Image (cartoon, rainbow, N blue to C red; front, side):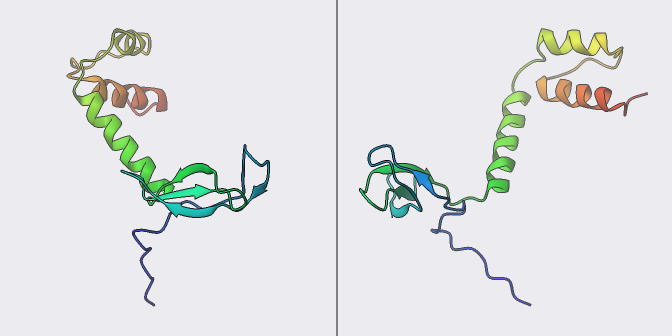
Length: 116
C-alpha cells in the first residue's frame, strides 16, 4: 500500500474553529497567503481578519526540532550551579560534567533510578 506524502505547502496543523475578535464569530478559518517565513495564514471566513499563522510542520516534527535545538543550546553552556547542587542532593559522585546537556541527562537518569 502506498501512503501519500503530505503536501509541503499545506498546513499540517488541523484547522479547528477559531474565534474572531473583530466580529465575534467562532468558525472554521479561511486559509490566506503567508508572509516572510510563514506559509499560510488563518483568516476569519466572515470579515477576513487575520487570526493566526499556520505551520506546515506536524506537531511531532515541531517538538522534535524544538528538543534538538534545546539540546544544542545546552551543549554550549557549562552545567549550572542548580544542576550541580541537585545532583549532589541525589547522591551523585560521578565524573565531572562538561555541559548542561550532560548534567540534564545525568539528572534524568538519577531521578528514574537508572544509576546505581
